[in-house]
Length: 284
Image (cartoon, rainbow, N blue to C red; front, side, top):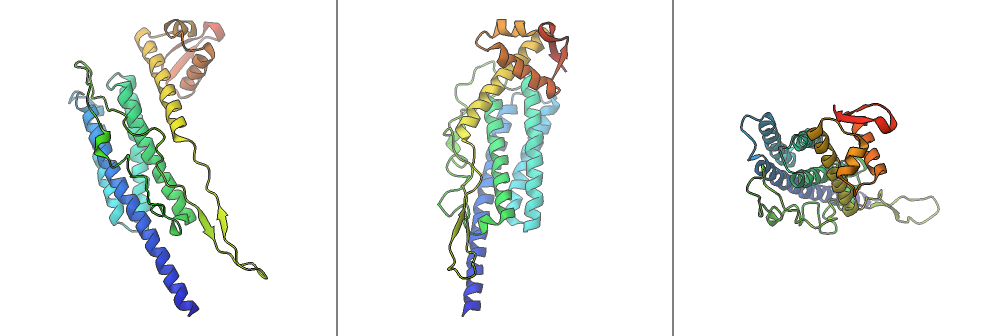
């Protein structure tokens, strides 16, 4: 009887894990399609001779293909494909940042696309971590009736291209998704370990805390906005000093500007000439 119950229990766990992964892959596929659509809209006004346009569109189509193929592969294939998707996201974000600095896409579109691509990347990381620790074998994404794909990722009305300025070089994507929408269901591992001489007691291991996505998104958008404005000023003037930046952007403190400049220099985006108050900055 115990053996029979054990076999039945393993079967139930296997079915739960299968259902969890199926829900994830469906959401992954739909998210990939939505991102590809958004990227096509944003790049529609780029010149056909612009290399970034062709490469970004190729990456978006590869994302749709890979995200859809995860559903039909084995565990090993699934792992490899998810790694390919992560690499795809990394390259896409890098090219989008380059397009922003070059003035090919708007700051709003960049912020929205960056947020959504990062959301997809984080969802993959969460799924990968749960698979490695086997937590989704017990409590999967669908245990509490939600997944990272609903409702924000699956609602087609979230993509809005209204209010387009006539001379803008790209579509503006309206950020109608609820701020702070969680991409992954927090998972709990339930352990049923027997201790000699004691009755088995359930042990609940709390997952690593997930940062407040609303706070992170707002901070990220604000930081990207500051850096974009600073980079545009430097691009227009070739070289600037901290005093030049504070003159153009009086609402930014000198410490904030210094912090952003240091980060951009460390990231090899800017070059620094001179020391202290005589420092000048130009594009690398």
